[in-house]
View 1: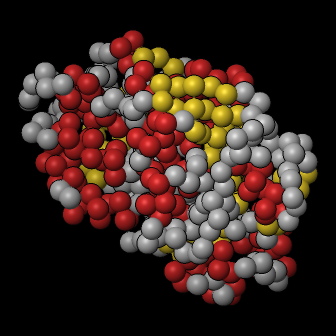
View 2 (view 1 turned 120 degrees about the vertical axis):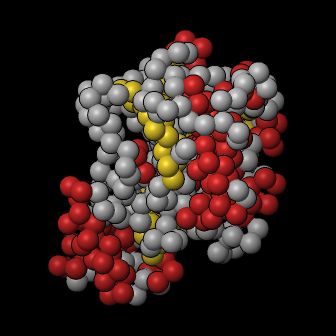
Length: 426
């Protein structure tokens, strides 16, 4: 069986799970952001969650932006009251100081584990598949899942992407996700994408999460990475429970297989207004920008902040550009502070904001609000009009290295020029 079939069969108590089978699968984790809708139903009906220890809340969206101040002042206390009434442990509430994205925290803090079924109340929940789990968003029927701990799933078809080689400097998991949209996007159609190949060993868990974060744009139901030494080393000391990894059998019934040489992946830029409008960074060099943003669930990890700091070391943000950096979690922010990364970014002129979703969505806590006619180069997940402020602004998406280099030049730039040492200093 494929990894997805193995996990779903195990969760459903059956020997085999064939594509098309409809199974009632036991879930291991439900992760929620701080934008909830199910609390009122549970409170009004006197319902109880199936297992208080397997539901976590991650405060990542709602803080104190001006037009949502009432929600920000009421939603967090409401979640805490709900947790107390449901006997959900206090450590399951990732409040400010411990907070982060609702699909980053489960991996970072050892909740999403190999061989498990993990659901999330966010469209990007497949990000957790980097931890060898079956992860997907549940945007409907949440109350039933939380009440029973079970979810009906039609076993999906699986496809395999075999990775070879290693990424070049200035190229990230976001570029791999974009490249797959270009190469196989039309063939995915609700499949689970499973990764294999010798190139896996070169990819950190940060990079794997960035790749899996692209499931929505790719059209995949989920993405799953194997539990190799890289992942097992990462989980050592983090895992909250024993786990049984899933591994694809030698004759796993993949509908198709695609081979990708990581060394051939180059920086790509998406948008504006359409994430499927993908071009090489070379094709958009020189486009002026007014805003640069590093953060959101597709970026903002320690490796993203590190490459941005490497590029900005000894340089300054262009005087016509506002650069915002939002760590993906409080833990990431602390690591970046301890290593000097944040100091480097601040010295270059960046504004560091509260860990969370940041400027990816204009309703979040961030001073980043685009004005009419502005162009922003961002590491975030959406490029649609009005996503980050004015509907007359442009949002273009790229990796953290491209965003950092562009913030130096005041226009879209190729970070590889700086990384080769011929970028000069300002």
